[in-house]
Length: 329
Ligand code: BYC
Image (cartoon, rainbow, N blue to C red; front, side, top):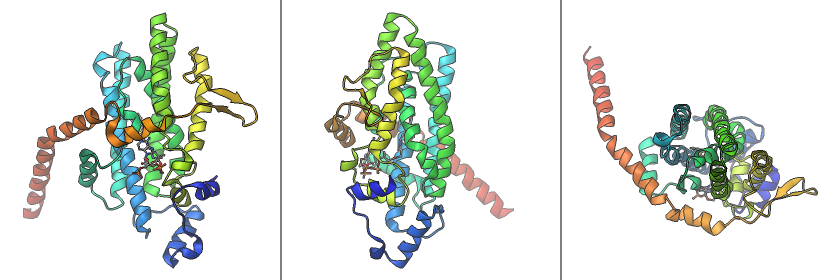
């Protein structure tokens, strides 16, 4: 798969002869499965790619709290509310591990946040969709965290040590998130006709955006080939997307819900489910900032950051005071 990705992606990958001695030695380490650590020499482009991906990932975890945060005060029971709160707190934790992993590459958290707040840095397209009903909490846990697990399990084996280690705990927590989402869907599907209709509506609305989380098709993915060569990507966008469809269709059937795409059909020859065409125009519009909630999400994040200024100032004042006391002792 790795070789195929290197060949088919849009980004040009240099052959061994085109690499400098240092780059060749670096690639040999990666090919031998040796992890790259923060203080090791690395090509600038490798560093840049990792900063891009890890920071986008961190931003996604942080912005990803907002759609679910919308339902904390309206959770149907105390138990559901406690579970949802715990999940959202986990996402904040994931953001923090990931910002720390990005910082090992020589970029500061302030720079990363400035890029998010100015709209320069991306975060996952999925978080620009609204959460209209309680069933959306089920659909997000099940489909969004479910997709995240499929994408992130391979990242536990990626070439950059700090990123791969952060992913281990993230994936464990995502498994709990996916289970709680499916549990919400099960409860709704076993409930009244109205509750089941809510579950169906959430599935219908979140299905396509969840498939878009895996990124553009392999033929359109600009970064895949290089990232595969560096073992940042172990599987292609389309391959992971197919895995998501194959895993989820039987779960939809178990819930007794209608398939959200009439083109879904088991293909005996391929050993996979076929599915319909993704609306890539919608995906790129969301990436450009024109999704249903892009502006609202960014505005909320910027306001939260500005509202927290007094707390960061207090922390700094406390640290300065401790530093002065140590110096004068
Ligand atoms: N949304 O060449 P490609 C979570 C961008 S958080 C937005 O294939 P790459 C959760 C891509 O960045 C889950 N942008 O890129 C949290 C690139 O743009 P730039 C977040 C996207 O990087 C809270 C361009 O499109 N997971 O689970 O090789 C609550 C071309 O794409 C998207 C991660 O971040 C998208 N969906 O592959 C609940 C996982 N897709 O940067 C749940 C780590 C693509 O060149 N990231 N783009 O301007 C990855 O695995 C990879 O970055 C991707 C994209 C597969 C997403």
